[in-house]
Length: 91
Image 1 (cartoon, one colour):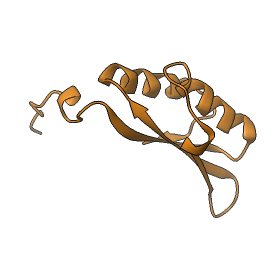
Image 2 (cartoon, rainbow, N blue to C red):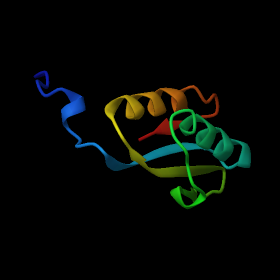
Image 3 (cartoon, rainbow, N blue to C red):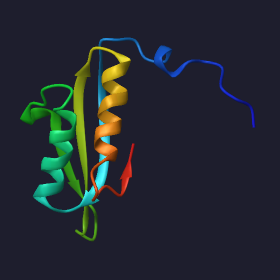
Image 4 (tube, helix red, strand yellow):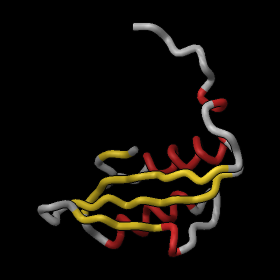
């Protein structure tokens, strides 16, 4: 397998709009946890949050579309969301 030579921080041009997607249980506490994780780095307006339930209703996808100023914000938000115990999957 060939290693990518392009540094990840050069793949986006900042400032930019970016979407984080977190899959977890269909509870309000999960939505609150995802929002709180992102808000450690920036403010998340209500309009930035979209919730899509799974077909069975057991899980939900919480999408946050926010404006990022730099690559460090991107890395920090991913790191903070990964700390949520209920998180099942993240894009």
